[in-house]
Length: 304
Image 1: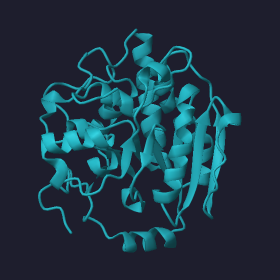
Image 2 (image 1 turned 180 degrees about the vertical axis):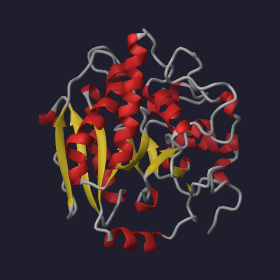
Image 3 (image 1 turned 45 degrees about the horizontal axis):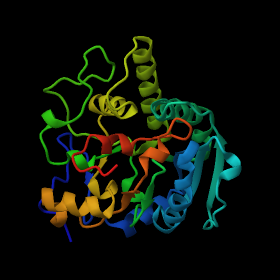
Image 4 (image 1 turned 90 degrees about the horizontal axis):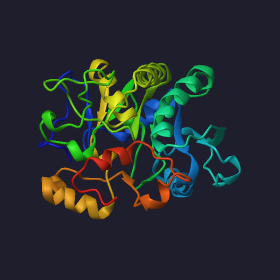
């Protein structure tokens, strides 16, 4: 069951992963013979810890089944991390991180944290890193077909529209700035990854760019997502995940598919944004926003 009506290669000939473009049995066999371990990083800070149980439970059902997985849970509340029964060969590592008053700062500091741990720890423990948002749930298979040196995920809100409509940072003073005639795709910060060295280079570069902007009193329009898009423009991903790997809630998916004609394109909805009460999640006392909600904010069909 192939995908004849969608692009399956980028202009630089990296595969775009859709249902029907890979043989999971062959890939599973290959990666199991390599004895790989995959690290899944997630940030559950302040009130966002309420999403962690659903995230972990659905990951155990759908994420990298049959492979070794380390869940790296970054949180300011280690005692509140749920104890989930894990499959054989999978473990949870709880890592304490500082919280910040603004959700934007928590979101942007993810890049720094992942880069530090990649250099100090992850390179000894895992072969690949998958970096995702916590306010999500897995709904279908997400396996080794995503793995590559460096991968990004197409933001569903900006799939199949002109790049002039992408919400890139346009301030030329910002390190995240992308010119009007530049750009390949608009990637979500809610799902990216690759080999540990490549993720280290990406997160370190994004963190350094964020710090340079802060020194000049600049904050990119979509924070770390803006810097991620700038990095992936000049460091092309070796694999790109289709919107199957980043969808929104069922109601929004239906709207989106009908509006854009994607019901015939998105065969499987694999990773889904959860409904949120933003007035609760983002209060000063309890907000900790990450990646996908930033993308939602610029979409015409957001319910948040």
